[in-house]
Length: 54
Image (cartoon, rainbow, N blue to C red; front, side, top):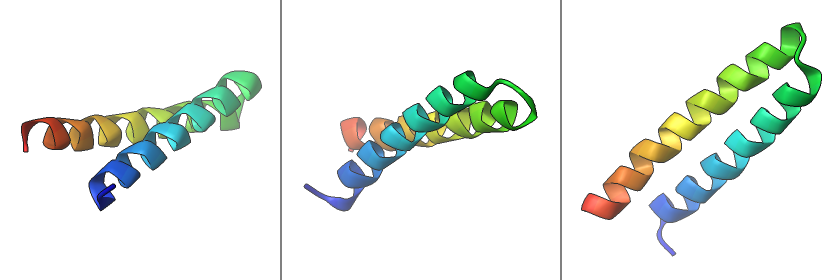
């Protein structure tokens, strides 16, 4: 496994964990966790696009 694949998997797992934690809390900190999960999923999507096309 190369570094991009490992980074893609870690960002996906991190995004999922932040999403679950944010949905569980859903107060002031919860919205921050949801925003963090969106950023992690977006970064994972860009890495996935690079893995597929490159």
